[in-house]
Image (cartoon, rainbow over all chains, first blue to last red):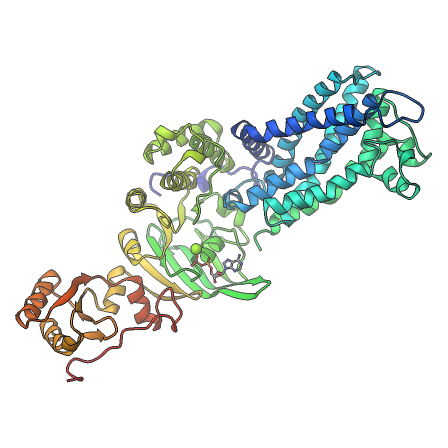
Amino acid sequence: MSSAVSSADRPTREEHGSALSDTLVVTWRNLKRIPRIPELAIFAILQSIMFVLLFAFVFGGAIPLPGGGSYREFLMPGIFAQTLAFAAATTAIGMVDDMQKGLIDRFRSLPMSRSAFITGRTVSDVIYNLGILIVLMLSGLAVGWRVHEGVTRFLAGVALTLLFAYAMSWVGVWLGMLVPTVEVGQQVAFTAIFPLTFLSNAFVPLPTLPGWLQPVADWNPVSAITAALRELWGNPNPYGTSSFPSEHPVLMTLIWTAVFIAVFAPLGVRRYRATSK
Amino acid sequence: MGSPVGGPAPAITAEGLTKIYRTRAGEVRALDGLDLQVPEGSVLALLGPNGAGKTTTVRILATLLRPDSGYASVLGYDVVRDAQKLRRVIGLSGQYAAVDENLTGRENLWMFGRLYQVSSPTAKERAGELLDQFDLSGAADRPVKTYSGGMRRRLDLAAALIGRPRLLFLDEPTTGLDPRSRIGMWDVIRRLVREGATLLLTTQYLEEADALANSIAVVDSGKIIATGTADELKSQVGGERVEVIVHDPNRLDEALRKVSDCCLAEATVDRHTRKLTAPASGGARQLVTVIRALDDAGIAIDDIGLRRPTLDDVFLSLTGHAAELAESESEPATAVPAGSTA
Ligand SMILES: Nc1ncnc2c1ncn2[C@@H]1O[C@H](COP(=O)(O)OP(=O)(O)O)[C@@H](O)[C@H]1O
Ligand SMILES: [Mg+2]
């Protein structure tokens, strides 16, 4: 083109584009979407508040805690864990939505970092999940949940929750590229995550589960993050067994998140690259 | 491959490209040894019916798809080995507008500019220019989901230009547009061409290839079956012709002789539709002659007109089958030499 300055003549940057700035641009793009479709965020927030109210008022009196303590204080970390486990679904749905539209072809035809598209997705979802977490915490405070162990341990709990959500997002990236449509993605994600959150200590103390389920629930990553938050924040945390996960919930959460990221990030990136067939 | 500096080197070279899609239903041979040469600074139209392999070709040349075999280079870059370098110097506007519905037009262009590795202020400035140029300034700050189809396609084209590419791929740039938007898109593309863009566009319409490109490659079943200018292709079919629908089937043979005489060539007849077709080298004047001759003979007609060859005619003459249908479904007009059926 006579009017165009050929980019080949410009001093070339890194061969793979700038991974950091590309990731930030993709993150910006994903976050812009939130206020443009406010219904999505509003519904997610209402759903979170509804969960808090349902469990606090409907089951609150019916579930006794071994060793005593307030059920609502016990419950809130469970709700946080459950809601943020659904980060996998949020990310999966965002991925399928993008992959289905022709838009993905444009991204893949640009001289941008190959992984920025999915890394940007996981980063924007973590920011979105932070917003959801804040709403949940405010509703928790309203029904009587409190943190008892000081600011540092409170912030450590928040960081751990977001790390867990980030790891779940990488599961979602991989899942999002396996399924053909948003609807299927939704079904698969919910079918996988609901049992995960209910076969855990999130809503009922582990000792009240049937014996054969207890080891399953004990090693469940949702149980790990829930117990970790209860421990960090001084909320009631009744143990069932004296197993490794129940004695080291924070460490167990870190192990789970490391495993998820180590397994699903490379799988997701590889699948994204292979979509060219 | 060396540095892609101008000169007479072709902008696009493809040799023996093949691509097979493997699906549950079986294998689809989308490209079957496709060869192509496009000189720098020229506009090539890849013309072919639905399913011919146009999009597959564009996707391979634009680094979105790897060929199963064969070789292609664009601006001197191997499309497989040097894909990332090539992406900096090409722009692609696909068959379906690939812009973000939830961003505004301006935000879309800024984002794609950034991802082309253009600095943020430059991307902003260029976005403004392109929005002006493509008549989108008024809608620049509205989310794209409020845009019409024509506006989306223009924005998509602007997005392909934001990185100042040296070569542009346009896959069916006007498919799905209403006639007015189509003309608008043609104007935009013509302006790019005047500015000296090297362009490969695909289309299903001979008319469009004719209006926009200086050379045409006809694709069918994953192969190039003919190349040339629009005039060259049309002359293979025989240029303009006159078509007459005769009212009374009993007078078809008589009309056939009259039309053949007027056109100084053998007319063909399709008895089923009572349609006569003959080459009309004299254009509109010839039409008048035919009308007069039939009128003098008292042969009533239902319809008459001059028709330019269509993609269908080009196809029929190149491949022996119609463009969009299988042989069994389209019944080609039976050619009957004038006078043989007295
Ligand atoms: N992703 C795909 N999977 C399977 N078959 C495909 C795919 N894409 C295209 N095809 C088939 O390959 C052939 C060529 O398609 P395409 O290149 O899209 O043609 P065109 O763009 O000329 O309409 C068609 O038969 C089409 O059905
Ligand atoms: Mg196509």
